Image (cartoon, rainbow, N blue to C red; front, top):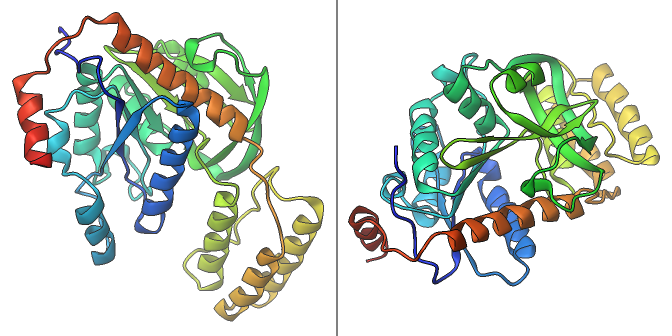
Length: 330
């Protein structure tokens, strides 16, 4: 299948961000990716256009935010973009094909192969894309993987060019992709972690597909906020087990304080304990240890998009793409 005509060389790199995070994380996820891209761009002009899967269940507040801040997903199908980032979504089904976003996800994968130079699939979006492309099944973990993990670069590639031999990256998920299955289907593992498995891996479709099982875009306090949410769900009876503390994230005094609170929560399971938990966390500080490696990763990705654009002679976009963009902005 031949590629469709691309954007001209003039103007900024244009990236689509398909944000499928839950309502509470919509704004923060967009801010995190926008700030990371802006910092990684190093003066390069980059434009980010936001979309989301319409089939995902949302509150009225979430739907209103999307109406006011996102373009309709239908506009995406007629566009040629330099790159796209697709975030994960909160798991709702045991089988990926039963997730409400599945039809939209598969269409985005097909679209990205023809209409981008490179695509990034984050966490659950990566699990779903790999399953669609090659039938690889994600593997449930016994407990949620949460923390900041040591990762090692195991293969040279433009996406990790200039990166340190080792770095740390946040991971937060209930499932994983078996590395042996990925390798058997032609995926190239670029980094791995003894505690978190495959970290970054790639596969060349018509576009370069980059898969992240971790969350390099996370703020310093993202895992803290997730842990607070899960503790609150336990104390209110929304989940059965008290959540495990994120690994390699809190310092020793904070860990001791949180272990003390865990004991209190197990002895007296009551949502009224949450203000005390929040006060305890308010006194703690966490640092973004993974920012340098995240900047390197996305700087390389933007440089790859730039190089791919420069290799193609200037051309006119398809009439369908131009008409679709005109409808959105006209």
